[in-house]
Image 1: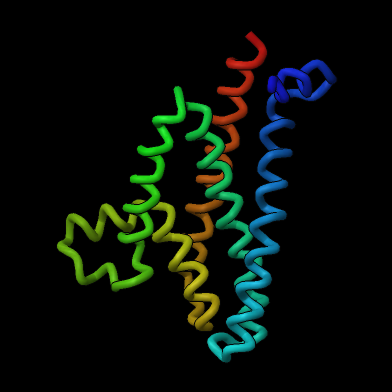
Image 2: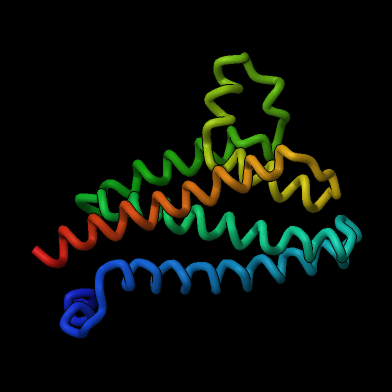
Length: 165
C-alpha cells in the first residue's frame, strides 16, 4: 500500500514514524494491561496499590518489546520469517521464569534465560505485584530501558536506509 512512502512525502522523518508506531503499540498494550490488572485486583491476586505500582513497569515492558519487535521487523525478508519469530517467541514464553523457577534449570541454561528480555520483564512485574522490592528490580528496569532505546535506534536507522534511499 506504500503507506510509509506516503508519510515520508510529508516533513516526517523515519525516526518519527518509528516513534509513532511505538506510541500506538504502547497505548494499546496499556489498555490491555489496565484490564488485566483490574481483573487481578478483583480476584484478590494483588493489592490495588501494588497493581498501580506495576502499571508503569508494564508500560516499560511494552516499550521494550515494541522497540525490539520494530527492530526485528525491519530485518524480515518475507512472510516466511514470521515462522522464525513465532519460534523465538514460543521459546521466550516457555523459558522466562513464568511457569517454573529459573533456578531449576542447569546453570548454563539458567544464565542463558537470564539474558533474555522476557525474564527481566517477568521478574520486574512479578516483584512489583507481589510487593517484593529490591535493587534487582532497578537492574531489570535498566535492561528494559536499554532494550527499548536500542530497538528504536536500530529500527529508525534501518527505516532511514530503506525508505530514504
